[in-house]
Image 1 (cartoon, helix red, strand yellow):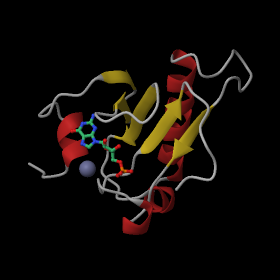
Image 2 (tube, rainbow, N blue to C red):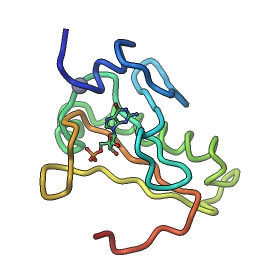
Image 3 (tube, helix red, strand yellow):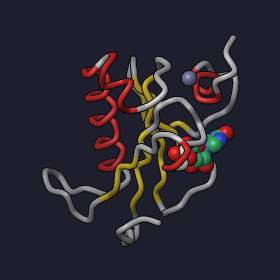
Length: 119
Ligand code: 5GP
Ligand code: ZN
């Protein structure tokens, strides 16, 4: 039993709109989408931040990025071997960046032109 929201979604205790998964990675639609495509990609194992994951299991961070790219392709955000129309990956870390769930997640955002810099 854990009180981590995303661990509980991986465990099936809280419903998720799953769009992709592997043995170690889980991807589901954000409940409060900020773009036409807004998917969260997470490792099934609990790690707090992207940096902590990279230190603990760099191969798993790579699997999370591969899964994010697969989701982007599935959502029509990348062509066969190109990068059109494109998408954004975001990994908020800590309160200044607005991280609200302490289980590392890559936001996959796309489907419209995304402004830069962010707020
Ligand atoms: P953060 O602010 O930590 O970078 O991103 C957390 C994300 O999780 C937010 O975009 C928020 O909308 C999403 N989120 C929070 N609770 C839930 C939930 O219960 N289900 C889903 N699908 N997304 C959630
Ligand atoms: Zn967790």
